[in-house]
Image (cartoon, rainbow, N blue to C red; front, side, top):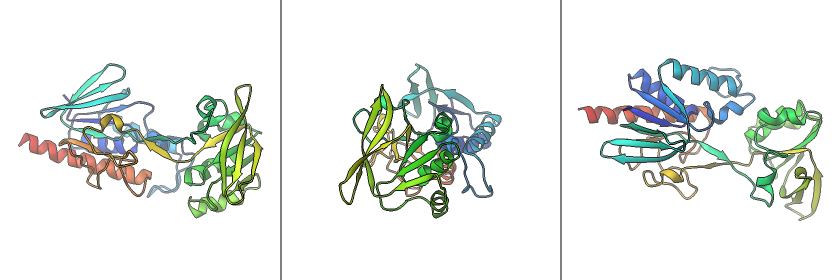
Length: 306
């Protein structure tokens, strides 16, 4: 029997585990993909207080190592069900494992949003990618597109510009939504071209691999084709909270509907990180949520024991 079952091994879940372990609780962290979360794919992180610059992978590794050194159990499995019977939660995974605990923290994060265009799913991994850190080297010396204009898109475009012959940023708005420092760095790169106010309306392929994008100018409706060897999507994120909807309210976008307290309608169940409705989704706010959720869970456990 665990004191705390944490579903999700990103910054929110791992921070929650650190706080709980330091309070003497027995903790298991269950992660479906890789520990560290999406921050692990950021080539350079410059907005963590007290740290000038660090790679996302290095930050994720340090956070994971800290959690494990404190004594957390860790499992690499996909949670598909959380049920509560009396004061005990039962967590079941796709692999057939089950775990029992007195509290649960859902820190399940989000997944990459796609454009929803015909043929897109088939081209993922065959020219369409989401991670420049993971796949950028495959396009060394070639021409690629980055679709999106937020911080992630700008960071990854800069990374790609170091290895690719040319990077074309396709942004549907007439301006970037990312930080000014990143935007300035992008605009200063000679091998980065920016197409503002432009939509991707289709994909072109050759022998099953991506060969180009169909583009449309928002203002004029004019269409043209952009030949590329690869395209990277950075157009937002989607929560995957449906499996837990009976225990925690969801808003109209599918995020957990809770405030900064991280509590849910189910006693003993808490949520943390990018999966909950919030104004700012950054690594520091994810860690903050983890600390808040773990502390709230500790208070709940103390009430059970009193």
